[in-house]
Image 1 (cartoon, rainbow, N blue to C red):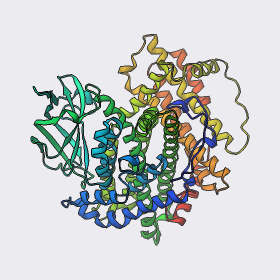
Image 2: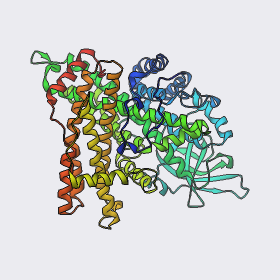
Image 3: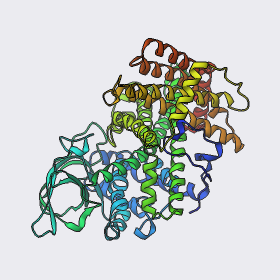
Image 4: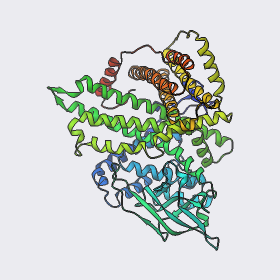
Length: 599
């Protein structure tokens, strides 16, 4: 399949957006999809609307065999193996196309969870770390849905601290099999899975991955969990009692299971961003429809400013998420191409590309899940009393959304990781944060007058470049305080999470700017997208000021704090916007079109 994508000679490294501008030509936006990709999108959308949605009530009641059969149907359509190389039974579609598939399936309710677990954390460990024999044995059947996969990492005593797992694997006297003992919990797809990706400690301290087949003697399941949401997905505990696993089913290297667990989660977080994007769009469409049908005071509630605000804000945040998601999607795709050209296999290239953009994947997971949470919360509110009734769609969407801030690493963990990874790369010399941070410190001392902004969106671009200086001010001051032994950042999670919020707010604003600029270059109508951009930058200027102030005041001395806060005030300047009028413009547009699309 061909793909209309950007061609760059100097693609951003992971985390480098903080210190470098991105040219408009170096980003990809959804409006660039070609006819073949749109056909794939339509196939996924048809599956959601004709297969999944009509069966929603049956899925929620966990009708036996139903979700498993839908996995098989998705396999027949090529949706399960779209990201898998052809030699292993897949289609090897490009990253942007696979992102589009995830987005569309994100509107599929509880099935979305089964799909994500199967195609992501279920299949990718084998693709990334399996032997050639393991790939040939399992991936073609997993791609077709003939086999279903699950991922067994979490234990009662180890969640975010995955390496604290207590499950054990001991090599038998003959040296032919490992004997597994232990307990896993919150295992998605476990009720119908055929393949279990399991992590256990070899010799008590060597965290290792294994491929375990369903019919292995000693493998048993707990009852289905009675969950708050995603009720149609299968979630059970898995028990291993002297389960004998052939030595050839060791996944990767003994003692290197952490490489599997953490690297697979990178792409899992990225995929989650795409899935929640689709869920947000579906929810907004329902809100638009209901607000026009529901009448109060002799008119549709869509006429009221309070409702227009909600609809517009839902659409703005979703537009920013979509812009960020496809920006990162393209970066990952470009990195895959570069690595393949350098001689890497497809599997190696996919693994390393996801690892490169692990900070952005973590941010997408956070921003996406919190965007969907906002959208579904207002979904309930727009529906009013009906939103609290299980007879209407808002209640289920509200319940289902909540898990996204927990799995694939909690949002707290992902905030910490996103910044920790960037700082570690800087300390290794892989990312030059020191030079730009020092330049900003010198600027704080001199406070030069900013240059006049010229050209379309020049003020927004200038503002976003200034926002990046806020990140450098706070991060640089925090790292310096640690070097001076005034604080220990390992115990100052609040500061790290402040820096993460500065970064993800800036990244989403810049991604939206790049999209609007590219739309303008393409000759597309941009008035509504421009309105969204202005609201985002306006709101970001105030949000960044508070976040930076909170962080700096928690560790900086009086004189140092005064100087840095002067810089923060200067770096967060942006002409105040009539956000009421801009939001009404956006709301009126989506009410007229019937969907959340701003272009």
